[in-house]
Length: 628
Image (cartoon, rainbow, N blue to C red; front, side, top):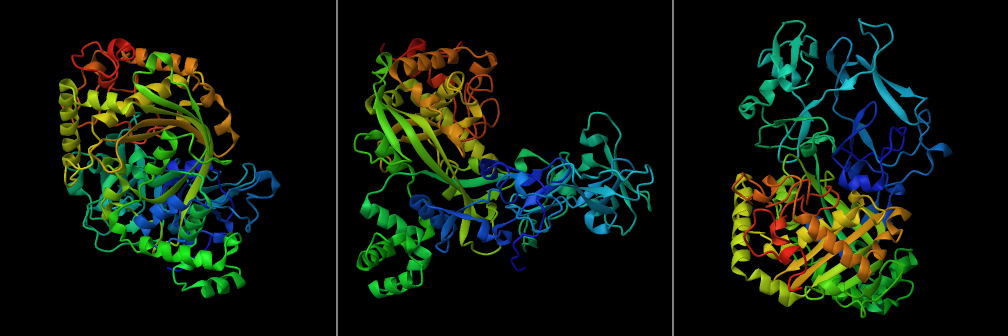
């Protein structure tokens, strides 16, 4: 199906740029006040409205995952002020930014309980002048009321683990193999809204069926095979061997983003040229010598290289060629190592308007455990969306490169030449642990036993999801320690820093001495927002020795006792079911989804301080710094 930019459709809603990557990206359903719509793939986007984002390290990582044909990162279009003519529901030529289409296509009239697809002609779209950019569908010939009632999207869908999503097979489900062209009705017989109280019936043949059959224990055997539908791409993928699973509209497992992110690090002149070459590789990869560079300049293709000579650019292209030919199967380039090197050597790190570090003294009571505290007064993070999954979270796998390709749903019908990305600016605090203290703690007998428990939980988690190599990707007890402290400190500083808890994020630098480019033991807590909210200075102010020492102590003290104790403290990594956390719950260590890089997995108060039922070797003894 040919690409057709959606620039002649009126605006029907608004989302923030940050929501696009975390909540409402390509393939996700946006639940608007009167309509549910799906964000379409990049084939339908108007490239004239997409702003290019420059971040060479991230672009190289995206190319390893998606292919060398990716030429750039693009920021989703952002409308100006909706009062300035953009978003007028009666302006059919209004540029709306992100293209969407109504989904699900089946709608239900709340008055007469009629269930029918939009293609039946029974429902009519109506623009709403009293709500800026609003649209709805109404049932014009409803027999119950005079005024056409607003119809609602059917709240049941089907999906499969290969990323396919489809309308619920209503006709096949109620008729179970018999042919009938009667109209369907869907109603709820109870007040709870549970599926066993939702019934559907055919007006013509009077067949009826409860929705409980689609969500019971044997539901997989009763559901049809997947048709391979990809509504965000307007097509069907052949040969899907999965059975459809019933899900609810708005369910959290209907869309999981697959993203890559990198912090922008300043580059020297030579590094800047290499970064520009990586960014423009789609144009430069076929050049041979300085003469080709000159020709490209003459036709206006290399405006970003004005400060570099033709010979200089040609040499940089030849230097990049061996790197660009590395097979994508070798995985994502290391995005954390350059950041770790900058944070662990702040005095040597280059500076610019998007990256400014200032080393601060370590709080006196924590100098035994902490090697360095760095205040990140300015930072820029760029995050790219390269795909998504349904039903199963990509967080079940350790890294993006370990995700089986059949589980990743694409963002375009063919190989994309660009991927959506967003940039945010903010501030943060980097805390580096003393490697010798962390390594010594990791080798203690009680800690090794706890690590064995987490490894067993890791294996059981992956086996339950049919993931090959159950032991692969285990982050180790070092990661559990750093991750748990990050969550404890995030919850504590959110009380005073002025930012909401969901606005603070973590970035964990954890590698053992035996790992490549190891060892690493550090935590970056930062806030990043698409506007000035991310750079208010409240987080950096808490990084000063007295304030940080107080918050570290209070964070650790709050971990000794949880409101859910003793149940929380008694929780074992694997004995109470398939899970990936120890003594942790929503009352103590769990954080908002946007804050945690691992979906609240690999958390444990046990590794931080003594708890009410603990016998072991926490890193911080007696609720305070170890060795104090």
